[in-house]
Amino acid sequence: MTLTIPTLPLPSGRAMPVFGVGTWRMGESARVRADEVKAIRAAIERGITLIDTAEMYGDGDAEKIVAEAVGSRRDDLFIVSKVLPMNASRRGTIAACERSLKRLKTDRIDLYLLHWRGGDPLSETVAAFQELKAAGKILDWGVSNFDIDDMRELTALDRDKECATNQVLYNLTRRGIEFDLVPFCRERGIPVMAYSPLEQARMLGDATLKQVAERHQASPAQVALAWLLGQPGIVTIPKATGLKHLDDNIAAIDLKLTTEDLKALDARFPPPKRAKPLDML
Image (cartoon, rainbow, N blue to C red; front, top):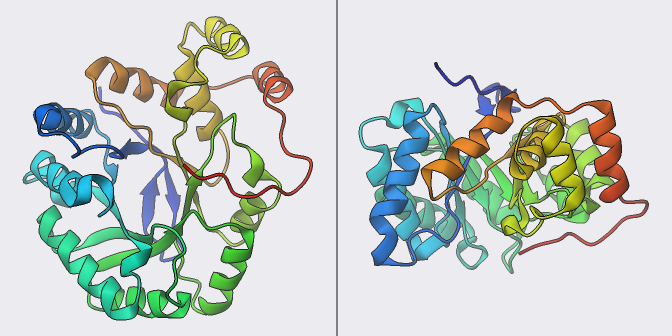
């Protein structure tokens, strides 16, 4: 059976899958490297095409792990990577991208993000992204960990409306962005990428999650992921280092929560009633 993952349109017209795999904390230990390669390769074999990584992860080794797992299947995939804010000057961004391309063993990155705000003017980073895009070295660009004020500043600079995503911490226990950031992005057609969708598994023992899961003969993780996937304009990138964990996550794609489920989850994890500072890990 072929896995069918829905996609969202980016401002460029390209499509991005709404579900992928993350690589945060990969590349930090040679002892588990082979298992990490195996996990990403298994995801690809199951039909997942979106892979999220960054130059920060494992000091670049996560990108190398992605390259090893991808092998000859690059053309079928949607690879996301990120530039560190310390490298985000115009020249620094271009140089960082070249290093990531080399580690990933590819000639282009599908979506290249500024990992978070740094000291360099945002205009320089955007100019570098535009230069890289014109050269075909990145196909789309976006940001990560941008709060509402950051996004307002960015959209004022982004006259061609090219920003393709804002990747932020978002899950049932971290709903602050729903007050203003999600509506702002949704109104402008900018998908929100939810990282840490399971809160490093800390939420999975919650009684309400378990009750909803039991109604569907599912797992709490599947419910938490299905809650995100059921929202318009949201992409999620859970990490999975084992095959059972991976298959459990994938099953969330077909899980449809009911109105009763959503009311129960809202009661347990209330949406925000006022603006809150952006959560970050």
